[in-house]
Image (spheres, rainbow, N blue to C red):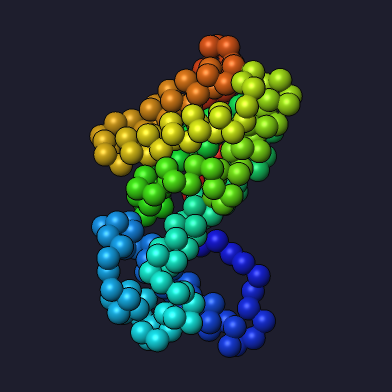
Amino acid sequence: MPTTAPPRNRFERRRAETRQALVRAARQILAETGDTSASIQAIAERADVGFGSFYNHFESKTELFDAAVTDALEEFGQVIDERVEDIDDPAELVAAGFRLTARMADSHPELMRILRDRGLAHIHSDRGLAPRALRDLEIGIASGRFTCGNATTALSALGGTLLSLVALRLDRPDLDGDEAASDLAEMVLRMLGLAADDAHEVTRRPLPDLAR
């Protein structure tokens, strides 16, 4: 789960644990059914907290489910960040993001189901992978690695393609996820301005291990 500043005392620690339990319960519901009509009582029971505790943290179920999506997106971004911290090439960073995401359908299925079902509305979010991808696109454009002129527009294309990859991996587990991710990443890099041979080579470089 994403981390924040540690609570300073027992009360704050218990409060933080209760909030996280509610967020975790909401994430499970989103991943399992996507049904946000569950009652507050049902959510509290799943979280193993008292009914009254809900309103100590959230004003409504909408606020809770929004927090659950944000929490999932931030965890997603952190997982990718930890694996690509030694990569400097903006093109390789884009490719690695696609390829690692495809593998996360197996290692982090809950995250991927939430991303598939809720990700479109968060392509330009200030949390999760979006700000990281925007940063890499801006660096790539500034350095001349990418020839597209607008990083925000490029992010729309990149994000939409990534969500399509997530849907493909979850809906067609029989397909070779690594191959599909590399092929889509190659297409995206060519769209961003890389030559065909360069895009192909970048998307076949050794990939950081998700298990580390």
